[in-house]
Length: 403
Image 1 (spheres, helix red, strand yellow):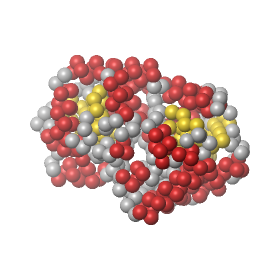
Image 2 (image 1 turned 180 degrees about the vertical axis):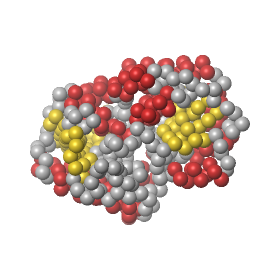
Image 3 (image 1 turned 60 degrees about the vertical axis):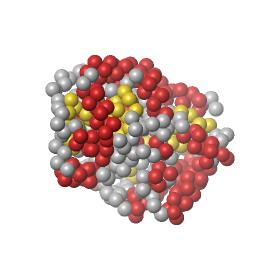
Image 4 (image 1 turned 120 degrees about the vertical axis):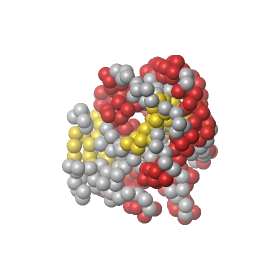
């Protein structure tokens, strides 16, 4: 099959969105499909164009393993701190990608990774020209998620976002669901699309990531008990709770690493300084390979989110990668993820935004190293046996092709 993947975020950009379809693209090629990726000139999350890329023009490159073509289009790169900046960022990609896509050949399938939902409009626009089936990869529910996080405060903007949502969903042939619970949202809020195919494609872990972990081996852990968070430092993560827990544990031999960038990073650094929280180390974003070293040297890993019904169905990809690396996870979410963790026996779900509970849970792990080791190994076995991206993608494509 000839497949066009449209994803605003793509490596060397970091984060779950970029990682999801860079790995799936590699897997598709290895499974015998022809792949082209349409993405932005790299600038996320810093808002600064990556070195070696043009600011105002299109750019072609090959994937890291030279297996497929990645076509880059210009965007308005900015810090995305205001509504105007965010809208400009998303719409500039939508416009430039739509124009560039007109000059691409025909495809059998167009797979669009959303959010941002504006990306979905690209496929809505070009679909008649390409005569391809349009598959929407739904990683999050937008604009509801942005509204809950306070990124959309205006009622008019919310209504506009819901209008975009209806337009995009109307033109979709099938949905890929990163979270199975999204099926309920679609059936309840968009019943006219109930007959459209909805295929689960969760955020698993690639065999290449598992092999990287095996190559690294098991590093020697230092005497201090290390708690790690990595990823986007944004509004949804509620990392203020982690800082409060670190303050409660300041007289123990426990250190915290917060690795990544995002809209809330500077605020958290200021908070740590003003409260004299000295057992937290903020580390900038880094390559995936270097990040694996930090994960392997940690004792437990954190997956915090703010308390919101929006996240009851969330299964964060970073949690699965921590498990693949043999680390127990402390997950600040209630809902669908609890069943997965119980089945994997690889950590615990606690009440979100409760710093005392988080501190107590971390201390309990520190005082029971046998539990740390057993849950780490159990999670690793679970991921390798049931949640590799290769197997899940092959199953999803089988459903799609045999529709």
